[in-house]
Image (cartoon, rainbow, N blue to C red; front, side, top):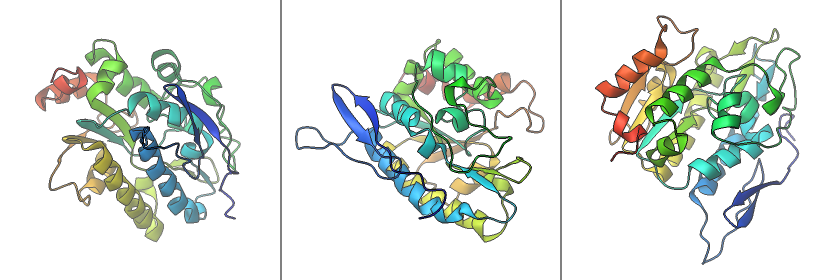
Length: 282
């Protein structure tokens, strides 16, 4: 068994009055003619398949540690899907990959601690990656360092949606293109765009294949790529010719010329006539 494959663990997630059992590596579906598989479970099934396909990439030159929060933070991730992915979405935001203090701790895309805990009201057990770097500890909801990108993007969405992420989520959904985090021997975060060689191209291909399946489920009218890497990757999507795909600057403070990102991003959303989606005004 590959070393970064977690032991199979069942996680209970409430779906209305019915308890659904979810395995990080394989979806256990609770279905019957009267109770069809919920959309969020279908979505997670694609993610679980993606996890399996990414397992061979546990050995990449210069990369010593690979984390997958879809596995060790599956509890909160599934709670996020269960709460906010109850139906197809008209607008989908797509980030690059988990941030160390965001999704890397909570399992929620761009999921900084305060937003996940105090606004989304999500909680749950977070396990450990199979190989933990001493400089990249996973403390889950006990993490005390906020993810700046998450603070920026979820804070903006909440503000625009009249203070309610429930309003935002009526028509919109936030997702990440690649579920993996990569660290070198010094604990430096290596983004998918910074990977080298065949592994970079193959990981992109595998993630794009899963993304296309996910979008077939969600059926969005508009996809917003958050950052250049995702936008470039989605040019090879089979949805590129039929779905409007836009690029929003990444909210990371480390990005060049990215001061005042919330103000610039709100202006961009207005210019592209997207505010009505965030406010559920269609």
